[in-house]
Length: 313
Image (cartoon, rainbow, N blue to C red; front, side):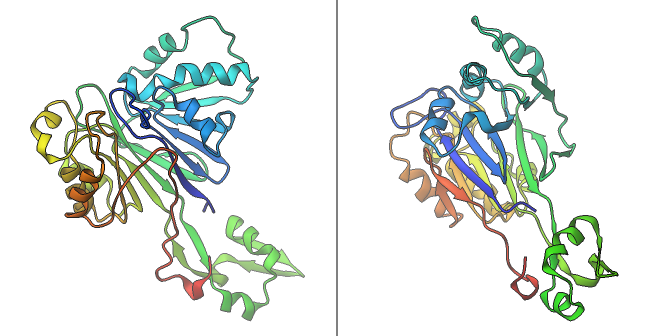
């Protein structure tokens, strides 16, 4: 299980940039693994304002290929190359992504110094990336679009009382947790001997762009620690918003409540919305743990310590 599961909101707007509101992009750090969820225009500039380096990005997850969600990749990749990046960059995306990105990343004159691995993923399949795994679900949008679910791997809790009773040295505990067994001083210690149950991994769900999907989305986001759902406007514009494949703050909050998530972040605001407090107020009237995402806001997703054995990790 990772020690760090941290979000940085780089851009929270939609459609086109507006003063103080960049295009959609979120960084998810899982220990040393840096992931980018969508990459709208200007993402690399937002990264430079943050505590992150664009050179450290390992994986990019594109929800769909409307320009506000991926056009920042063109400049980002070229900047990586100009700075002599060597390690590969993984890009996960919906169908047709390989063709679209092949054309997009060929724009202009530059030399690519590193490998770009584009993978069109299958909805419903789970992909293992070491410290965490992810899956995708098709959303209701005019073009092929995905929601993403990121899940940290579970961790076996260590029972301190059992460790002390057996005299297991602290320095071999992580070896036991990792390998299931370890030898020390002529004795063999097993994970079963010191286990105190399982700590469930933290979960982040990102809706991407979508019309409301109350049943499917609430199931996909079930019990998430953090749920980021697009909320393009407040409910006064719902008919128009839904027509164009988007969701209001009221509808996002209803889905969060149904999904029993711990925290909802509103996201993907229309440039026509000037006072975001209206969206937050509306969402909180339905789901109290609703919050506005804002540019460069950082949030470290906490462990769920309920039921932890003796308070130990």
